[in-house]
Image (cartoon, rainbow, N blue to C red; front, side, top):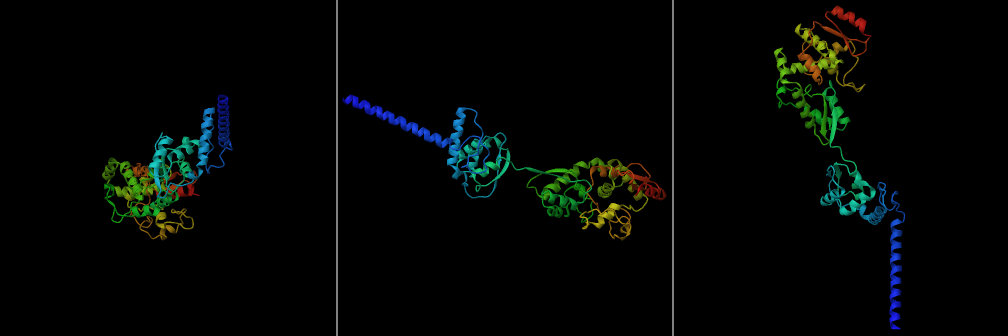
Length: 393
């Protein structure tokens, strides 16, 4: 009788345990599956969260649901910053895993719980979107914000293209417009006297760097200063204008400064690269005969910024402006070269002055009939007048 009673108690206890386990399993299942479909955004999770990655097997499905449940239960921690502090640049290395990133984030005080960060990234599929490079992060950001930020690396460089024939003020405006660096900072530097490059040595006292700011495409750090760009432009000039070119200019009796001054005029006059040596020859011939250069771009440079058009180079010029613009740069009034370069010429214009085409031309006029940027050249003033009637509108 007593033995039968013991067996009865054991059976009842076993039944109670089965009910308890089944009930617990049902409760856990209900909590895990309630509203947490893998392809949907969990409503209890903080936004933004990318759509969770779909599991591909029953086992992965179970793990995925459990991770989702855990992340949901920790939603308060996901929205809690690690602390206060300044923004820092956090570098994600190429091929680095989310585990390594999570560990380093915790070491740098950017997240409190690296495991929570890792699971959040995993559940949302953000671990697959980690982008190598620099990321601006701070301890005041939440896990959600940091996870999103790590999907887009900051650009480590900025690229700027300086066109040939621009004066330094135009370059400064471009730097401002493209948010490369402060344009005024650039202008302040290029207006300073400096002689730290040998090729700057023959400039007159008080000369700016106009003419030597070599036009090209430059890649700069995002936090570059004006000195970074100016030094790159000067080094580029030094490498492009070779020692042989400087020797050949000197053999013709030209200083490098004189070459750059005339090249800046040739750059502004020429449109077709193929014509630059011929245009240079016209000015060289006029200088050799003590004729004034009569170069329109020098008048445009003297006129400066045109507030009505928002441009630096006035076009067209009025006939009276050739005589009325009182400036040392006006080559219709003053013989010889102007006091300094009027823009920053490219290598083709500089080469054209050092190696002008052989010619006895003294005049040229824009070919409006062809309207292709070409010019018509003449040896005499009478021929030039005829060309003006034939080729200018």
